[in-house]
Image 1 (spheres, one colour):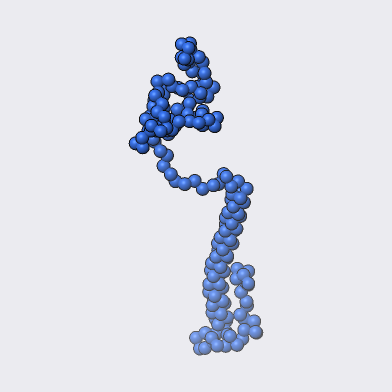
Image 2 (cartoon, rainbow, N blue to C red; image 1 turned 60 degrees about the vertical axis):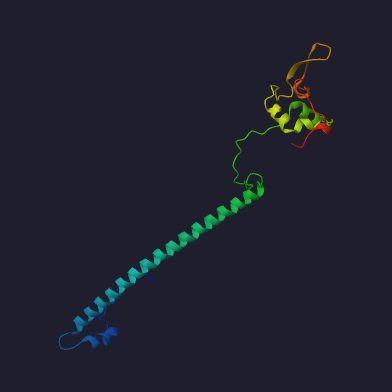
Length: 179
């Protein structure tokens, strides 16, 4: 029961005669005993009001915490549902440093031969050939044309991917060393 709504009883009524009788003596009359009882009731009621206020505040804090927890759980379940729907978007990414060294690819001619499924000499994958490919003037654009001299002395325009650098001396597979 809310002590703020409590009404102080009239301690001069006959039902409180026994309570007043315990306080009455030569110095305290019946009227003063009723006043003492009323003062004691007010003191107790004020203490009850303080406890009531503390209890209401605690209940409000608990309700707020429960509401906040329910909101957080709802948000967590929404995030989990979103992760289930978009697995690729929320895939874990390893914390790896990005290399600063350039990726060295074989020359365009060797790449083109491999893509077309033709035989490609191992020479194009040796250290010296890869180094030459990194310095190569050929473009990486497969649609670009490169002008190269042909065996009959004329110049031909051929795709850069199919062009073989005439300056490179290809070593046959059986003549390659393991160095």
